[in-house]
Length: 152
Image (cartoon, rainbow, N blue to C red; front, top):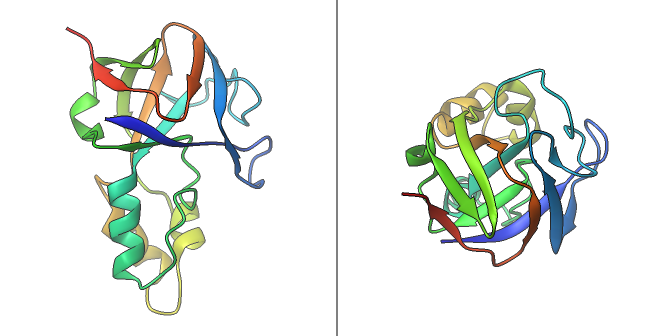
């Protein structure tokens, strides 16, 4: 149960940048990310997604595996994110709270659409599989390979 990839995007709609590590700030999110310090939606500090879900979707479409394609911040492996809604968990030394599922939107659908799958079909395929929105409860640095653990 680890963080496999870390991505940030300095501007909305901007390019995803893969990072080896990032600084998370309590109540604000990832320093340098487009959503840092914003509170427009619940759980806007950090988004997570399961590598296995991204790979399954791309495999079904016969597409190249690109774990950054969903524009989520933290890509996990071996973690069932849906089970973390409403629960506190640790990513390395950073304490987080799973706020709600990060359900797919039409923007994500358009990014992942191709000849074989429309934007609407993408959204339907990724319902309950598109990740988790979380709030940062305690700050710190998170690096690739960090453990993800539930708290007691």
